[in-house]
Image 1: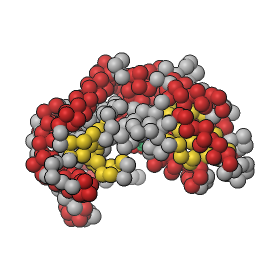
Image 2: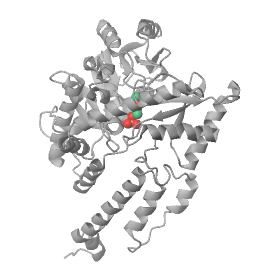
Image 3: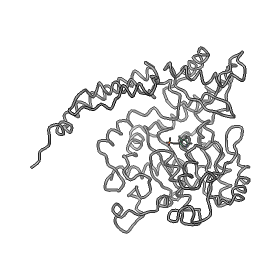
Image 4: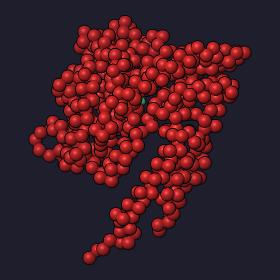
Length: 478
Ligand SMILES: *Cc1c(COP(=O)(O)O)cnc(C)c1O
């Protein structure tokens, strides 16, 4: 006979959970209130060793300590993305409602590799993807999966492109079963594209670079040359990858022209819209992704411009059945029965086997908060970004790298009297000074061999006054 030990019984006690939960939500709401009122630092800067000391691997055998106390320290010491002066990497200030959904997902833990392990989240995933495909203008018959981030999403899409276009079965035979493959990729693409082709065993020449113009957009007239040079090098080009929102500058490649080129040459068009596919939600800005509806596959991160917590990435295929070709393998212990193309066993089509209930947060927020919230968010942040760029341009002591296509702005401070040769070092020092003070969080990038400050206006609570304060803080720090 066995009986539940007292420590396990206490850990699963519903009344204990109720009390902890109420306290925790109060604690998080207080934290959210302070952070959104701009109280406290954005990033409470500390070197890695500090946190190693504060959060040691020192685990008692018996219950000890207090959840609120430990989590209070976590909240204080963490990076505060809801702070309106967070203007750094492309990571969202999540909708609090979405965070509550993640709690539900964690408690239910419906793994959803197969339908039976996640019946509701499987249905929500299917329908939220249909809605997203509709937003992009993809045709009937499109479909896809949710996966863990844009990097995994791009790999998933390129695996399907390979099965469709290689001309041989590279999944079973490996990369040496036919001619070596390559994809045409703008120089401004995210590094995960090159990483994906290397994962597939195509080596460094698995990516054929396509030059970009002065605004960091793929030059469509350079595609023919890139294609010819790949062929001369003995490669079989199978696809073009275009960015809808490149990472460094947020540049949108000319999708219509790229789609024409792909059509002409029978190439797969993959659009990396991890950051910018959400632009299609905004009536004012959706023209910037015109042509995305002609893509064979699209990656779209909801944890970037849809205010979702990480991770939730859609991989959409214009022909939904292509989705089954990314991972064309069988696992009979999981996928019993004859039909290996059941849409409802999503792990047939994902890198993940077990997966969290990803769709729950997005489906729920769309359903409860409505779609206009998401459209307004894109329109307002893009508007804010354009006003910020205008102020930089007319300031006299700041230089704008390029006019922004979306909500990413790269710029540098050029105070009078600082020689050009010292400007790179100045930007690095300015950023360091601002982020260690905790007043702002921004990042930096290198463009054209020069260092630029880089901001992503991703928090809907950021205002024009915050951005004025940013420029003032940079002037003071200089
Ligand atoms: C952010 C980003 C990625 C990577 O996505 P993750 O979700 O961070 O893995 C890929 N491509 C582009 C264009 C991105 O902006």
